[in-house]
Image (cartoon, rainbow, N blue to C red; front, side):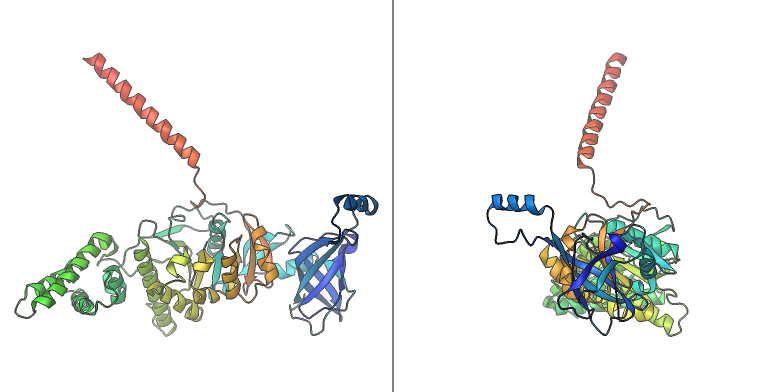
Length: 505
């Protein structure tokens, strides 16, 4: 492309968009510059079409098309649309539109470096349109204004999360991952170690509503809830005082309920039946969740370590337990950070960036849960107290729109489902129709990045994570073959043992 000029503006232009024609084919997402009013303006190519004046839509005979093509050759034009991003110095939108006929040039690597590379940035990858230009993210803006990583299954979410976590560790950060599928527990991060946190809570730090969810006392069971609350508070008070050395908190609650059930003078048959219903639900909870409680365990926040990849392994618990644990951690973290800001030096003393895998489960669009409530609370209030959220999901349409709209930064990998696209677009003011139309065409590991953590929307080829993460699809054929091989070897071993025994006798 001579002098890097790819075309000229045509038709009516606006402050934010210009159309252009060209004889050379640029790339979608490529950055360009326009010079007018003594300023150099940066823009991004958002749409492209190729056409021919001679071979127009009014021709219906293939033979005619062939004859015209033989005469005209490869005579076609390129039309496109450029979104104006602002001047190259301050990225301020110009006050006047570009004059028709203005040259449009490819942006130089020097200009792009100035936009995408900056001090203390987190390196995410490089421009799809220019491998020489690396893309950095503003960590402060990413953490304080929250992030959503959205993509269809297999598009590269786990790799993206791993690159971000490792980038935070390189800057001494504190990520905490709610690991729904045990993908990161055995990860090998080049810039920091993994700090595995077992999914265990001290009941002293639980709210009644949290344990109520585990006991499955819901709806209109007000009387059951009253008895359960009374027993819960009494047991908790005894543990606080230290007058009771019970290591089994559930047993402590149950003993009080049983004493009331046995008191025929105080409680009538109907009340005693209700108490027995609570005891039965408590037993059911005990059989499911007894490993969750430990009265001798420290506050879970005290186990978080700065400069390490803190991971709560939720791969072996059900969704109900995961919701309770995530809600508990977010609630206590927000309370602790508020206390620290107001002078409590024993509270959580450093910012934390929470990564919520399977965000459509933890903050669902279809139902109200305590977990969703606390996700939304942290999304709204967390930036004031140094708590950031990263919502990760392969089903954006199933994520609570309020929580998603609070994520002022997005990394969107390949998205094909139209409902997912519309849901994401409704949550982001920066996502235009032209950018949405590019999402299905992204390759694995390619993403649209937008928000406050980057100066302008951009298409990025995300770096390949060099460490080890269990997030890829398993090799099904290999596992079948290995299983068959193991069975055959076991059969041969048994036959050899049998022959040896026959020879012995």
